[in-house]
Image (cartoon, rainbow, N blue to C red; front, top):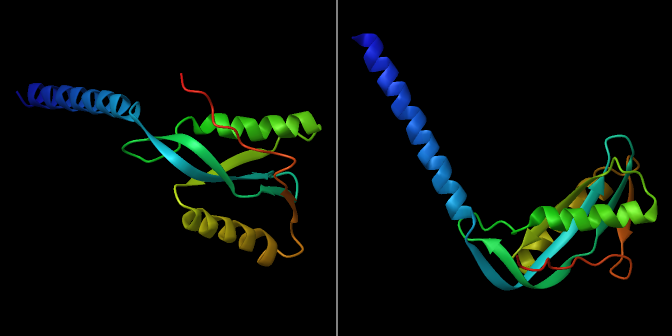
Length: 144
C-alpha cells in the first residue's frame, strides 16, 4: 500500500513538473517591443589577459521577453560580436557576453562596474581594449 502511494506521488510530481515546464516555454515566446534599448559587449578569454569592451550602443525597436524582460534573441547579438572577432582573425576561444538594459542609466552602471573590475581593480593584470563604434555596431535581428 505504501509503495502504491509513493509511486502515485512520484507520478504526480513528474506530471506537475512537465506541466510547469510546458507553461514556461509558452510564456517565454511572448515578446514586448521596446522603442530603445542599450547594449554593450564584453569579450574575454581564460587563456589570455586581453579583454575587449564595446561602447554602449543604443538600439531601436528591440524585442524583450515579457515575463523575464531578457533581450529576445540574445544569442544572435553575441554571435554578431563573435563574428566580428572571427573576421578580424582573432582567436576563437574568446567568450562573448552582451549586457542589456532598457535605460541608459542602468546600462551605464553595468558598464562602469565592468570597466572598474578590469581597468581599476585589475590594473596591470589585463590588457583592456575598447572597441569603437566605427569598428563594431550591434544590429537588431529581423523578426521571424
